[in-house]
Amino acid sequence: MNPILLQIPLDLPDVQIEAFDTESKKGIIIKVQSTCKGTTCRQCHQPIDKFYGYGKEITLRHLPIFEQSVWIKIKPKRYQCPYCDQGPTTTQRCSWYDQKSPHTKAYEQWILRDLINSTITDISIKRGINEAAVEGIINRYIRQEVDWETIKSLPLLGLDEIALKKGHKDFVVIISGINEGGEKCILAVLPNRKKETVKIFLQSIPVEIKRTIQRACVDMYDGYSNAVYEELHGVEVVVDRFHVTKSYRACADNARIKEMKTLKKTLSSEDYAQLKGVMWLFRKSLWDLNEEQQIKLIQLFNYAPELKQIYIYREALTGIFNRPLSKSQAEAELNSWVEQVRNLKLDCFNSFIVTLQNWQHEITNYFLRRETSGFVEGLNNKIKVIKRRCYGIYDIGRLFQHIWLDVEGRRLFGYA
Ligand SMILES: [Zn+2]
Image 1 (tube, helix red, strand yellow):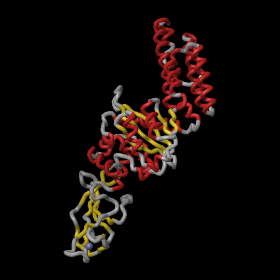
Image 2 (image 1 turned 120 degrees about the vertical axis):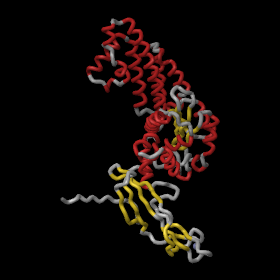
Image 3 (image 1 turned 90 degrees about the horizontal axis):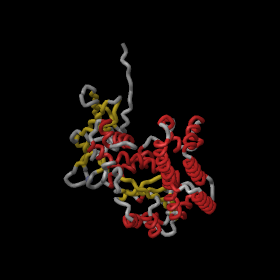
Image 4 (image 1 turned 90 degrees about the vertical axis):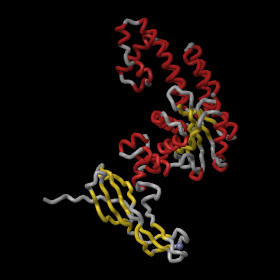
């Protein structure tokens, strides 16, 4: 019988395999030797190649093979300097590992890719590596604050908040941006959403980069808009569409909840039971419903005609934001919407109308360059995921690292 041979590249440059042990309980142990000759003297920095024996053997975790842990053992070569007094020795360093790390670089980058959209705990369990080691990897590769050197310009700035605990009023603020290449970057995590805190961050942006900021996309909170107006002169404040949408949809949803409570009391239990699942249909646009679903929704509207109006006016607002209007056209459309809603006495939208009037300039700035919403919506979805995973992370630096990994990690540690 012929044994089947399979060759797997070790993927480490300039090494030669000396021994191979598959019997160990720990996993697969591969002893290697560096094929590179010489090093540079740690004192005079001149190239030296006078061999001076081996240093203490080190063990480094490497990429697994068929789900088995792989450990690389290497005795680093040492060299003696013929130029310096007393001939000091220097240990050779290979490019594929870091002196401070117990893993190969290939292994660490693999773990970082794994960490994108995941958590330290998950990866620790999944990969059989302790949490402190995962944290060590994160700290070796990801800074706890932005490296301004990597950014040339920031046409768009985004300010958004996440609550660290459900129902908590403790917000941290995520500051993001789009760079000259149209790529998302995470710039800071601020410990709270006070105007002063935001201003201090904005002041810390290097002047050359500050000059390149054209727009700031914010939530409807004057701490943000005022910080931008005071610190970044001439920057256009845009309320991102995501928050506007959320605001008027919530009005319609509240009206539906109220109406359903009334219907529960007034309809026979048989009729009411027929409305089961109508909440999801009410939330969708008519175009996204099939015929059967449309009939069901119309049934609800027959019982509650005001909900029909609310639904129509909610969809009309979405329509306004979807259309390629100019800023002034959008203002006219929104004003006419407000007038109609008032005439029909659809009071559920009152709180939204107040918001719309307070923020009209910034809300309609969206129509100047509609490109912002995609960015903010995308980031918001990401933040939602991060939020779910980050309950209990109170360390701002750690949060920054996580968000950085999710937002930028794929580009830097991903496969493509
Ligand atoms: Zn030397």
